[in-house]
Image 1 (cartoon, helix red, strand yellow):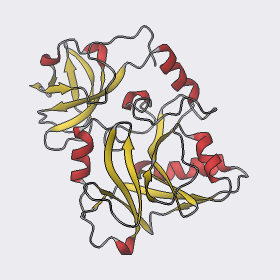
Image 2 (tube, helix red, strand yellow):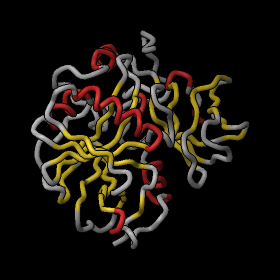
Image 3 (spheres, helix red, strand yellow):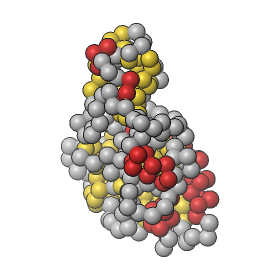
Length: 281
């Protein structure tokens, strides 16, 4: 059994009688109310701005009478500050665990200890593993295998592929990958999310780009126009958030002046060349 350290993830623990209600009321996903941290599926979620842009995103799993959420290190301080603000007088303890715990990734063999299944819609990414710092000596201190796996199936991550307060939840496919609960009551940014769903105004979607010889952030050119930019590159492949309506000739796409191959993720419910009748932005 191999566990890879995900060194760019910061863990937060929410405990207390109002912990579930607090989180469920402010994020997009359907958050588990119970669990023991022995492999049950974690919930994908995003914390949005009132304008519907992603401020933080990650997984949430229940264990030890608490909810455990991880975020990218670049947004950890802002996430902590916002959640303390949303807490108000709720009976919730919020613990920043960056000095005591680490997040890991395991795939082929289910690990022991505190873990949650990382399943996004039909995509099984293995397990999110949580452990005290003193218990990770045997972990592989490299997360390339994790990023290669997620990029290969078209999964985007904040910090690696897009910055905070720049991207809609639909842009990264959260509506398809079970990261949005369209049934529950109001949460921050819900109005924008619901409008994009019901009016069909999501015009940017994840696309797998391969054959890349350029750094993250380089533009994808299609039909002579920029369609979007690539995210983290691993072994020449990245996931880009692209304007589908600008990709009318897939074979003509380039990155840094060189031809690349574009492919839709296996979970995609959208197609190249799709146009929308109303601008989402």
